[in-house]
Length: 456
Image (cartoon, rainbow, N blue to C red; front, side, top):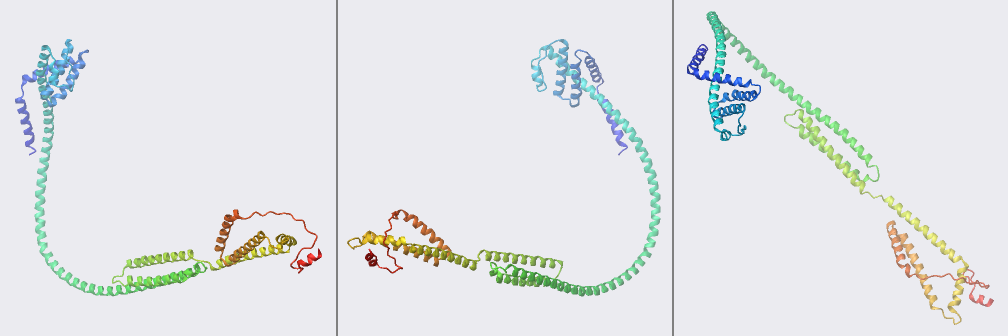
């Protein structure tokens, strides 16, 4: 296949040369040479160079649209060189729009350049095809040389392969002869291996039984060690818990929670033993059992600690100190006693003053007067003073028999009553009275009013 490929390419080149028109090629060459000369003009060369660039791009995909665009570019340059007007034509305008405003001379020039564009593109494609053909022929020549060398090498390799195949056949015959001997040897070795395998299988079954017994003993030892270690740790932990409970509940505020906390410690001990018995009693003890025991015992301890803290907090918050309340009551009684003593002292002072008796004596004179009938206003004052004294004694008695809270309430109530009754109190005026020369009546001296009068 590699040998026929160059000949096919050469035949294709020959067919292209047979189909090409020499007159068309010559015409295209002449027109292209003329345009290249126009492009060298110093004044209008830029327009022709741009048109030739359009030719290089448009001829690669030549169609009616591209051919018309090339002819319009050449017509524009030709009319510009001739000094004639050219209608406005942009890249976005269609060919119909560009040729619609042309006069007869411009349209004839456009038609001529349209034909020249076809000839120029034909010539350029022919030149491009020739260049490609020469390149292909050159590469085919190089490939043909390499193919010839490869064929020679292939022939040498084929000869070497034939020699190797002959040697291989001889070695295969020798291998076949040795194969029969090897077959007999393999049969004998197979019998020996089978016997050895049976013996090994028997010994493996014995070792399996031995290992199972050892594993059972190790499992029992593992369960024993784990159980005893958990028991020891549980004993130490709960012993420390009992000590902590005893220390925490040694105060009066938390003493009420001691029994409940000891109950929680006992419940924790029972829970830990149940967890160990349930997990370690499995049929297949593994390392995961130790982790499970540790995890669940830790959870039980956390729960018991949380419950203990809640109980301790509740008891401490709801505790009532009876001694403190008793001390408060005693302090209140002492204050009441001190107040009563001060009131009694003031009463004694008032009773011991002689001015009171003089005023009383004068009041008696004023009350009875000459007629011997007591004054009604004086009787009203006496009744008011007695009611005031009874109210004072009742208040003091209520303070003695009441608690501090009730005493505080009674004080506030009495103060409010005083404030409410303050506007209705009668006005009291101090009137100076000249002391008489005659001695006044004294209850302690036992003198009667008749003696005083007889003295007068």
